[in-house]
Length: 188
Image (cartoon, rainbow, N blue to C red; front, side, top):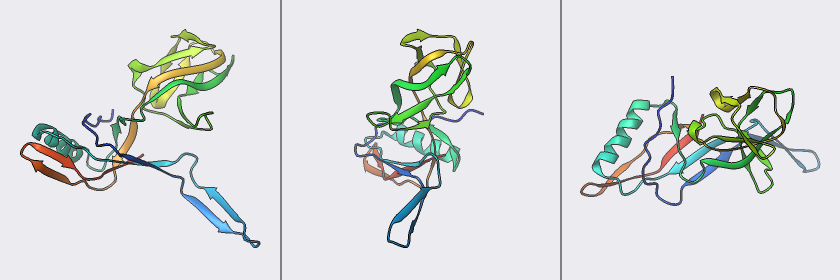
């Protein structure tokens, strides 16, 4: 079953994205702090608002949220939705399967798997040469026909897999002009 895609609407500026690593900390005998994260990858909370919604857009968003209920859906984040020239892996001539990832930081200091790729945006390169001898499987897995050797890079757009945290308020600002309160989405 494929997930529904949230309608693309006007997002109000100042959206907030918060990573949660579920960290446990203890203070050791000499006052030193020791911490451990309980997740390999953060759970993200995305807090957005919509403004300038027409009646039909307002109804579309309400209908969408009622349809998915508390279930998962796909969110195209307006600011964070693509990777350009992302280093995916170093092909060793043996492995054929590689997880697509998003990287964080100037020097790619942190990465996390990306599962919901927009297939028509995917471009793959091995040693800086465009290749098309692969298939894109479920959960963002690239499978090459023959094991590649060299640096594997990719350009692609992706969705965030999320669920609605709780509820959302809608305000009729003027006739046929609506906006939402905080819409909190949590990655699942």
